[in-house]
Length: 513
Image 1 (tube, rainbow, N blue to C red):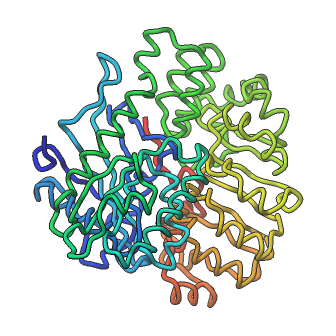
Image 2: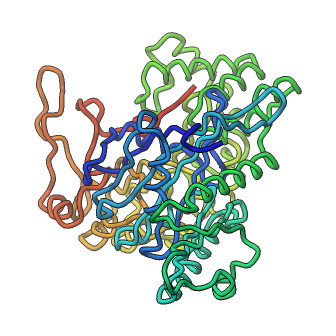
């Protein structure tokens, strides 16, 4: 089977069409990035599995050439454009190859179509922290090695950097498939494969020899890493929901599915079907309320909507029991949304001590941290626990510039979509650290009011008839940051009406059935 026969590409953009390539709306990007680090994304409803493959290595080793060649393998009528980002000199690329004729058999009655997302981030000053964030989400790393002797030192640095980034992952990199591609084998003075193995310490690792410039070995690399990912998935594949129901799923099993798929309503509905009674009524009512108004605030439990009073009564009677002992014991506050606790307020020291237990008990998407300075900036923002949430509320913590810098440098906030740093006494140094941070690549909204300087937008003219936002205003500091570093996603809001601003987390992610 060849890629040209079976692949179709569908690419996602992280910026405007700097190189004449296509531009995809931010809403599309938000759907693409709603995935969990450390495991492939399985969509049971559509019966697909998405593997993320990151091409890493030294500068000019041929990472981009690999992606461009693979993109050309797909027939023109079955692909969109490969894409780039202005903040990375127009060279960040990402494309998804859909292997429609390739399937993974999880059980005799359950098969998954394979999608593979290929991405590479160039070596620029802005990408210094964006690259480890991307590695943190990878299912596989293709280490592209430059065969030229004068690039040996750069290859060694790249090897050590990849090892360091993988070590930061919760699994220490153990769950990541690794493949070595020895590229530029056509240069006259290319080092021998044996010498490269010995110098880089890559003996025993799967390898492919390539000349990415001409396309030789590029498809082999893709085919090899895809086969390795499929084999790994088969060895440890989660049981499909349908099979679990046939086997008699337990409440604990379905709760685990709810926690690991927090942006899908299907697992929550199946949980309601299993438990029945008041708990099922409460879940279904909140799901219906969220369906009608995805931007509803978390304090609104459906009041004014059909069944709203009933929902409030159920919450008062059973809320603490449904929240679970871990949350009740350690959180100072918690909010239900879509039938389960999705937001907690907690002291930072308690989160560090009991976070694994708490985050395993509910699909928690937002954490409001208190007492961050007392817990220590390094301990808090160095914790992998933060990589498991999508929204972080640090309002009023008075973190100052040091706190903003710690956030900007954290390797665990690559999946953060929503962040509040309201009233934190942050000045120019901290503001610039946030603007230039590559670790916050997926951040869609930043609340920054009541600080010494503010780089975020505010709604300017509002149409008095329909509330449409006519313009976005920036302070002099915000305008200067954009002029110096380019606009970040949280500086380019997508809200069209005043009622949509500021957005909630659920305005920034895509909830699926």
